[in-house]
Amino acid sequence: MKYHIDTQLLKEKFIKESECPLCDVKKTVEDQIVYEFLNDAVMDDDMRIKVNKYGFCRHHFDLLFAGKNKLSLALQLSTRVMKIKGGFTPPKNFKSAKKLAEQLRAKTKTCVICDILNESMEKYYKAVAMLYKKEPEFREIVKNGKGFCMEHFACLLENASESSAFSKEYLQTLSNLFYDNTDRFLSELDRFCKKHDYRNALMPLGSAENVLPRTGDKLYGKKNIKQ
Ligand SMILES: [Zn+2]
Ligand SMILES: [Zn+2]
Image (tube, rainbow, N blue to C red; front, side, top):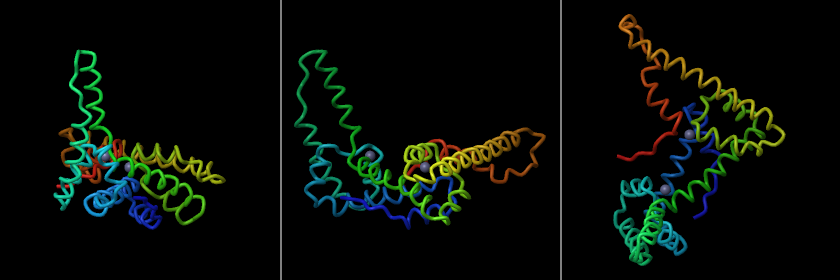
């Protein structure tokens, strides 16, 4: 399963002026990968081997479980559980018990979907820098956006070299977005706190009304939750 990046998707999410367009891109890409794992990927031999070897993390198990194809998930889980069972050796002493504990814990941390998703998102972080370099229109969209969550801001900084000749301007734009948007959040948080003073009971909250969940998204990224 190889994912080619979709620059149109990238532009669409940037135009929407969300708190982090890359969280929105990630959600779309993640939903596509999860869908594939409940459908075509199950038929692919290479993918089956990877699922047996790495399994899924809790978050991706939850997204798979929220999907429509329960049989597909059950088949993939049964081979994964069989693999874990096959690798189990009863501990003979406390030392080997500790080692086994470490190994068992590690088995729930690896995830084939995380691997594919991270690989795919790396291409998007590079694409943002490349589009910034190539397209003046995109440059303006980035400058007028609301910035990024901390994780995606860090990812863009790590891949800034892709903007080559424009790198100085690109880094300046990213820094400006960081300052402008942290100031916006600080003033909303301040308004939210002031509203809790009885003397300000009639003061309208405005955009500060939902500042707490938005600060969560800004600091930790948006969660992809399926009900
Ligand atoms: Zn983000
Ligand atoms: Zn995962």
